Every structure is written in structure tokens, then in C-alpha cells.
Image (cartoon, rainbow, N blue to C red; front, side, top):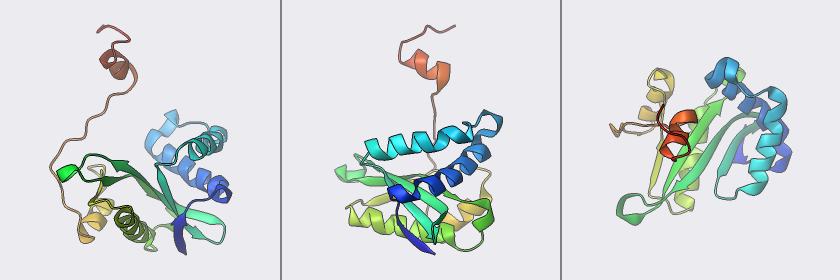
Length: 161
């Protein structure tokens, strides 16, 4: 297994793992599988601030981590945020999550970030335990989200109903 930056050649295999992740989190509302690769290709070609790391075995992507810079972090430094870290269900238990975390930290340091941050679902005790073993600490901050009508209302596009 190797952890490296994703390339265009990885996108079809990466799309399969991203589809699995999307189904895991979105259930019946998940994007249809045939739309995952086109969306991934558009994003990959249009964005250069997101770092996509992949765990690969041969030509198969087993998992991935996406990192985006956040500014400002403490003392006007840069933080790298792991937006997603996901390991395919059939590849779990092989140390891939830990390897992706370690490579993410190395990438963040290489880019001059002073922090590495992520969020984890409150009921994902397995992932939380891994992150804590690797030295992560709970910031005791709340993570809030606006989407759909709430986002449109906040943007002033619709009135409070």
C-alpha cells in the first residue's frame, strides 16, 4: 500500500470509494453513482487548493483524505483541515486510516501549517479513538451547518416562512 497525491488516473477508482462514502452518509439521498466521477473530475480540474491523498494498492484506491487550508488559524498561521478521511469498507482494519492521518500531518507541515484539524461524527467511536491515540484533542467546539432553505434564508434569498 502507498499513500500519495491523487492523479487523474486515480479518479475512476477514487470515485468508487467516494460513492461508497456518499451512500454511507447520505443513504437514499445519495448522488446517483453515474454522477460521482463527472463531479469529481470537474472539482479536481478546477481546484488547486484542495489536496487529495489516496491510499492505493496497485491501481485500486482503498481510501482517501482531502485537505483544505484554513486561514487564519492561531496567530495568523495556516491550519489544514481534513474535510474527509474515508477508508473503503472492505479495506478497513489494515492501518489505512492511520497511514492517511500520518501523511496528512506530513503534508500539512510541508505546506507550513501549524495545525491539523478535522471533525468526527459523535457516534463514530472507532475513528475518534484512532484520532485520540494519534494525539488529537477534542476542542469542545460545536460544528454548525446551514444547507438548503436555511442557507437560502441566511443569504437573504428567501424570507423566513
